[in-house]
Image 1: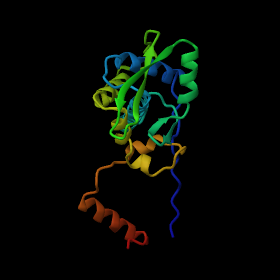
Image 2: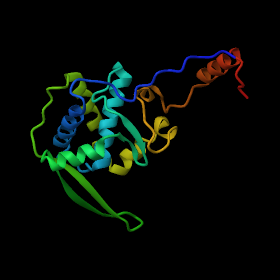
Image 3: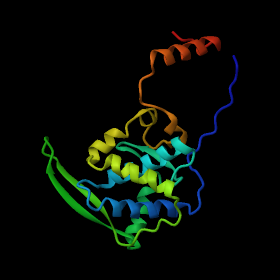
Length: 198
């Protein structure tokens, strides 16, 4: 059987500014979403993830370059919890608790909104970077946290376990079903390589 080289995957993409890129983007997103009906921590994580992975899929370079992991409610930056805690401690952000009542099962629906306390600083980003962020904000604008979470549960999320790293190459996978033509082509190539296709 032919051995194929293992692909090198990119869990983190080194970009100027390092972790500060994520910190600054959180502040920017919080400013942009100040008037959004829904803007809890789940939505913040999904905007970050969509910005980074859409940018990587389109141009081969993410916006923040930080590591992501699979969590029960969808992808999130691996360092989000300690970084967010430090931002609160340093007076960069604060939070506001918003009560949306109860769901159909009687469970309280509480959202923790991120409130920026400093102006945004986009000096580490290009206009193209921010265009991906703005597109992600627009995409999720009217969605609740549950809806953004559900939206992020595509092939990259489904094929990993909680806590697993989510390398940027997963952005190249599609949730669209294969066309019959694509499926036949894949089966033909598998047969040519001697793989079992039954």
